[in-house]
Image (cartoon, rainbow, N blue to C red; front, side, top):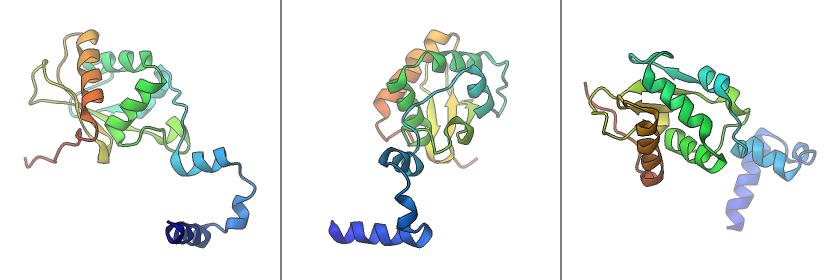
Amino acid sequence: VDAQIQSFRAGVNDVLPVQSLVSFSRSELREMFCGEDRIDWDEQALLNHMHPTGGLTERSSTYKFLVAVLLELDQAERSRFLDFVSSCPRLPPGGMAKFHVDVFPDTGATRHGFPRSRACANQLYLPPYASKDELQEKLYEAMHCSAGNHEQKVRDL
């Protein structure tokens, strides 16, 4: 482990001299390298950084349901959502301003299906849910049961 730590330190030093890191606290360094622990968003931030596409619009009921559900999430659930759509449970350094998700309709799914994601591309696919409660139930189950298995392979069209 010592050799690995020394290699990491040498690599960081190549990009940013270790002496310049002394002026930062541990929490500041952690935030710079790992992202933000506190996940703050409001409706406007979600509308600015979640982009409906592929036939969804900001006026689509499924998209509106998603925004409403995300606004109600506590910190732990927000972290699960971020992990589900991005494979990282934190906001990137810079917070919501540096985060984006493309939200697509899942055209091959019934409204009883589960949301799915392509976390490597920050993409979320939503079936055509009939209500906010239906979307919330399916999203919660998908977030809690995926445990790293939520990636979808790119389909050949």
